Length: 104
Image (cartoon, rainbow, N blue to C red; front, side, top):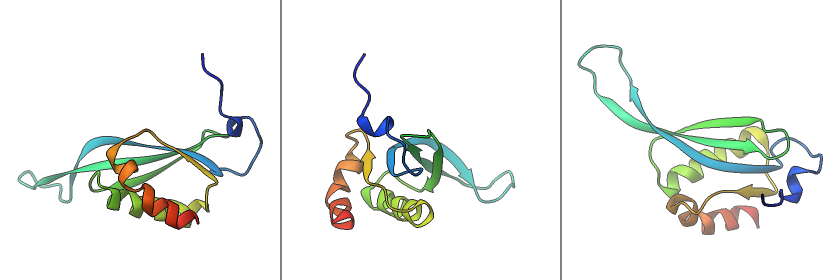
């Protein structure tokens, strides 16, 4: 079993160190009628590394632009995070340059 990241063991404010991933697709219908069109949507899942609390954001697609919009809503609600852990998904890799600008 691998070692835990050090940020998981130190007490800190919620979401100071966070992990991010996507869930979905989920079908979204804007009308309860039978013939209404459904759209694909995704959930951007932010997890606090210390308290394991979660924050969910609805996202319309898996692009870097959609992730940045969800991340801005997350930061507006929870404050800036010091560490953000993710997998190497193309949407996260594509947003890397924009995230570096936001943090510097």
